[in-house]
Image (cartoon, rainbow, N blue to C red; front, side, top):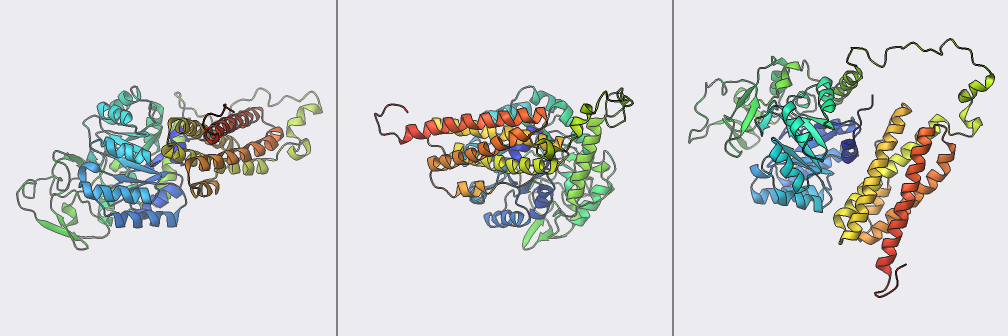
Length: 507
């Protein structure tokens, strides 16, 4: 059972399992672990300094070559700090940025203009539609069951159903999701993946304090509390979901008292009672009274695991759940084969078992290697085309680059599927072509370079297609070849028109 969905191509990940950008908790170690394991991770950088954001971006890149993102919250960040955060993300060339709480249309447009994938987390149908209209590439639908800051008042399932019927953008689900059954459920509803927070908070690589992790795994089902008590450093009227403690039991002073009480330290920074800060590795003090964020699924987490192991467990559980049919059987169960005991009429019937190399077809190992080379090239091409579309100075080049990008994403998806059919592991690399292309100045020069890369793919496919035994794969790669030839011709025509002197006849 292949979990790969179209949103995986946008995020350049293998499975649609996304790490929530939990403030303080989702640092470089956790993001790199989730991303390297095949998911997609967001650094939780709300209100952090640009220096820390830059350092964390570099730290992730030191651990993995795969794309990742950063989570920012404009509504909870002073304008000058937000500007510095955005600059750090843009200078760091992160693949995606998540925005949460009040929609900042200006921020969405700015990030998209710089070629950054924009992901908006929403808590209502109205917010989802507004975010899509603003240009969000991906929506995260957050249900009331979510841990941490909760935007809306509607449970995940009805909200997800409403949003999916009203928008065209890819949708991820979030809120109380813990394991593979949860992922399978939202995929069945039509989401293209899920965002997990609490499940990854309780991992070895999480920057959460061990006290917080232990409270998560010791939690009983249905134990979380939806409250406004933890409010310092956040817009007024914001609800959070936490595990019960002395604050939620009303054993402390009123949360909206005019004076502030220091209950801990994070280095030289004081931590106040009723602050939105959750306990981190770097903190000391009265940890019990801090915000112990947890989603409603916390009661189903039994142990603290390495992040990669938790991701693999979620993926395996989802595959198993999706394989289960309505009557409880699974496709893995042996079925009676009507031809099992039939003797073939002649030796010709064994032709399909002949050696591939002898028959002139590409052997399985060679085919897997060739498909992975193509996958790396298409992934690089998709990223370059996205940058060209963002930087293009006029509609013609922008439209052409978007067509090329859509095709490259399409063929990434097709190659993933082909490798899955071959029971082979898809490459996670991005071809060297990307770095070479980005080193070229000028949109037109970069597009010409992309065209040469497309030509390389065409030559490789012309050699490979005749050696494909499987008819379905033969057709897919043949269509891929023709699509590249069309895009090359279109790009050449556009570049020739732009190079021609004014008043010259069209080429």
